[in-house]
Length: 207
Image (cartoon, rainbow, N blue to C red):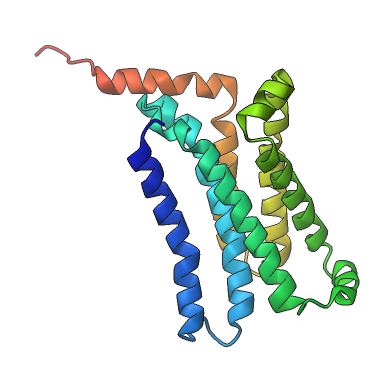
C-alpha cells in the first residue's frame, strides 16, 4: 500500500468530524434542534467531500505528487458514508421513522427526490469503486464514474432548494463546483502540468 501514513491521516481527520458533532450533541451544543443541525451538517459534509474528491486529480497534475490520487477512492467512499449518515439522520430526526410521513414530505418538499437521486448515484459509484468492478466494466467504468459530475450538480440543486432565502453561501459552493468541473475540461487540464513545470523551473532573466 502506497502512502499508508497519509491514508491514515485522511481517515483520522475525516472520521473525527462526525465524532465531534456527536460530542456536541451529547453536550447540548447544537442548538435547540440538534437533530436538524446534524442532518444539515452531514449533507454539507457530503458536498464538501465531493469537492475534495474531485480536487485530487487537478492537485496531482499541479504538484506532480501521486499521493493525492491515491486517496481519491477513500475520499469517494467517505462521501458515500456521509450521505448514508445524512439520510439516516433525516429518517430518525425529521421523519421519526414514520414512513407514512415520507409520502407527505415528498409532496411538500420535492428537493428530497433530488437528494435521493444523488444518493442512488453515490451508491452506484461506491459499489463499483473496487478493482473487480474496474476489470469487469472495462472502459464503461470510467464512463460510469463520470456520473460524479451529475451527482455534484444534484447535490448543489438539493442545497439550493433548501437555502432559497439565503443564496450567499450556496453561491460560494456553486462557484467551487463550477471551478472543479472547469478543471476537468481537457484544454484547461493540460495547463496544470505546464504551470507545475514553470513553477519548478522559473525563468530567470539576466540583469
